[in-house]
Image (cartoon, rainbow, N blue to C red; front, side):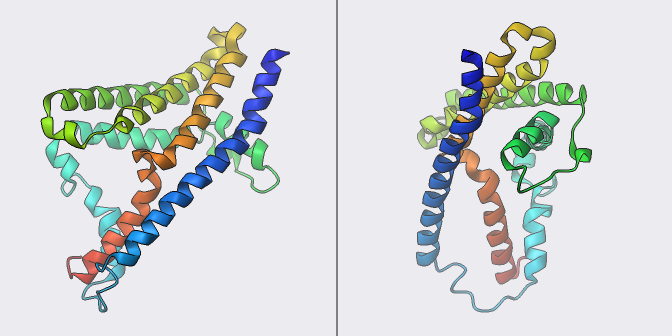
Length: 234
């Protein structure tokens, strides 16, 4: 009975709270960007473009992230590969059947996702292990750099050590939830409920963290491409 109430809360009431806080955070970020844009002369003061806008945007979205152009790749190729792989796998894991079915349960009257997009098992288990491993390595590297780099200590904040562990917990609990029916059947509902709570806490925290770059990067890369075109550097 109690387990059912917990699951009901995490899948009905908590999503509404999550959506409200997420939208509130996005609105605050958007207002901040708008105020910066209003006082920034960089793009507004450039009346004519010497280069191709489309080419500039293409370079920002594609070429700048290739190993031969990426600053991160030039600094550390191994962790460039780990970072890119982690981002790709994270997006891929969102297409697992459990995630899509959960989303459809909330939005089924509005959208439909073809079953062809489902990522099948045991492929999801392999991806989960790789994702958790990559994220762990990146966090350990961050801790090492923080301990040995004085400049990094100055620019770091508490948020740098909240977002990644929180995402790591999301990955671990998600993997445990996927295995729960076979290995932890007695605790399956608790594991799923905990995973749902952690995921929604992560979503609520995202607009206030550096992880919001997943959304802001699209805007930044587009503006960067326009700036390159304006400066003739496309």
